[in-house]
Amino acid sequence: MLLDVQESQLVLVDFQPRLQAAMHDASAVWAHATRLAQLARELQVPVWGTEQNPSKLGSLDECMRQHCAQVLAKMQFSAVEEGLGEWLSPEPVAAPRGNARSLPRHLHKPQPTAPLRQSIVIAGVEAHVCVLQTALDLIEDEFDVWVVTDACTSRTERNRDAAYDRLAGAGAELVTAEMVAFEWVRSAEHPSFKSLQQLFK
Image 1 (cartoon, one colour):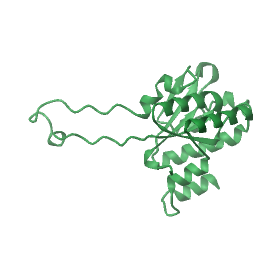
Image 2 (cartoon, one colour):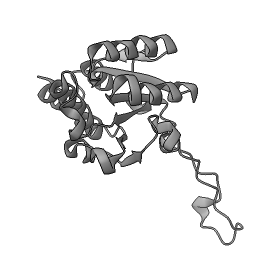
Image 3 (tube, one colour):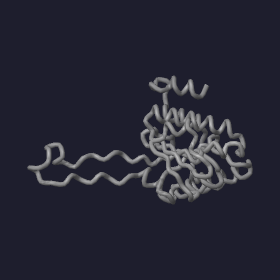
Image 4 (cartoon, one colour):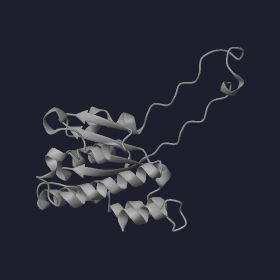
């Protein structure tokens, strides 16, 4: 099963500069996540951010924040516990109220709803804490979760790798940033292929 750009959303978990210095391979992880956020925005994939305890740990990295539709400040380790799920699958818009005479003609028929984007691409820190707990809750809520392994990290490789083992066992797809990018674009003839090449050269 390939990742479909029309069904995707990107979640950037806790990429806060104050955490960066303590993370394994942090500069490469931050770079991969930023590239994905840039490409997602160009492809009109919704991008969401989270920040853990921002009063103590600071804000989401500004290079990523600028691509986010919204950023969720949280204290729980799972962003789903703080309302991320509602952002990812908003309530359908209620039908307009009124009778046939009071409503414009185009509102007489039910309005089509936007298709659900059930494939959640997730990157962030720490892999074994906030990414893991958020991803497991999303799987429980019946989202398809794709964890970008080279855009996630922890303070130690052992914790990071243990998170990947557990996530794979729970049904998450483990991918890389380039796998996501090339599956979103699919063809060298895609209008965004040159952007992809520039980002991932």
